[in-house]
Amino acid sequence: DSPSVTKDSPVWSPDGLRIGYSASASLDSGPFSIHVIDVDGSHDRTIAATDPPDVEFVGLADWSPDGQTILYATDGGAGTGLWTMTPAGRDKAPLRDEPGDFGSGAVYSPDGTKLVFQADLDGGCIYRSDARARHLIRLTQGCSEGFDLDWSPNGEWIVWAGGHHGPADAEMMAADGSQRHTIVDDSSVAYTAWQPRQTN
Image (cartoon, rainbow, N blue to C red; front, side):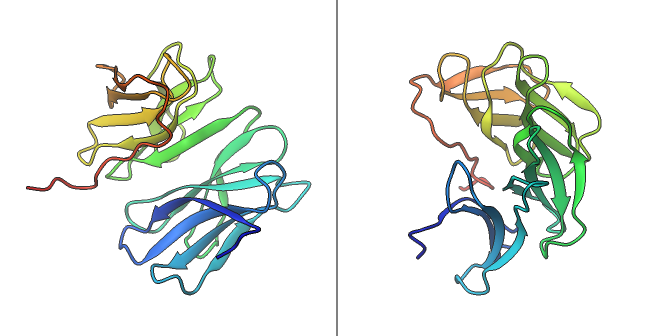
């Protein structure tokens, strides 16, 4: 219960015992922080926060499948970059931090070996990389911003909101960028998520 603070982007820990989330006093100017809380709402811990002028923004992106790493975005004024840290907020290290926005909507593949994200490279499109964001493969051509990305549980498909027909369609493609198709074409999709496992 925090009426003066916006809390969003919740991500489950792989063991289901904790939840990571982002918080901000103002969506435009912050201050911004990243938290980890126990699933019953107890033990809310701040693990990263803005520290102007060096860090103007921090936001949670994803929790690695092995539970050892939290992926997050930072902005020091030149654009967002991807960073990692432990769930305790230690060992903060950049994956890729350079001018322009890099890594929006970043999520790990189910096996933790790959990332998919949006970047302002070659006009702003969706990319896949290794888990260290070193080897980039462009998956989409001429796209609008891709955000709220997610992988299928078998790692063979990617779904996201933000297609080229409007600001918030839902689209899918194979993990290699082929077979791209729109699944909701009415510009009303705010979020996408893939059920973690199949049910009978």
